[in-house]
Length: 121
Ligand code: FES
Image 1 (cartoon, rainbow, N blue to C red):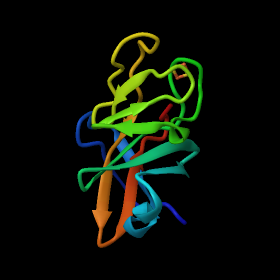
Image 2 (cartoon, helix red, strand yellow):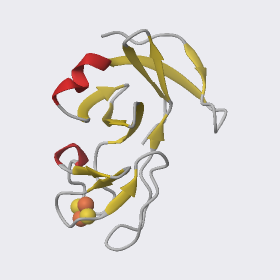
Image 3 (cartoon, rainbow, N blue to C red):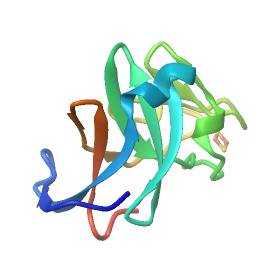
């Protein structure tokens, strides 16, 4: 997939490049997808009909969150059971204390786009 035009992050105001990363139909097999956009490994989540994107690796020890489990709007890390709020990326306490980076998501028809800043973590 190729990237698209540059616009601005809706919260930070920093420029982002939008990347087509998936189709909504890909969630039929489960609510978690692993993707890459602009050199960033992403976890995509489908929660209550909405789609969210965060960095793919846990901030505790770097384990892939796409191997974890969604529990009522939170992603549970499979390694040490750290919890992050999916919509905000907020760490919910030990063993995780650093929030996840989150990325803006746009849906165009059934195509999912994620906005990634050039200097994104
Ligand atoms: S690696 Fe995720 S909680 Fe330890």
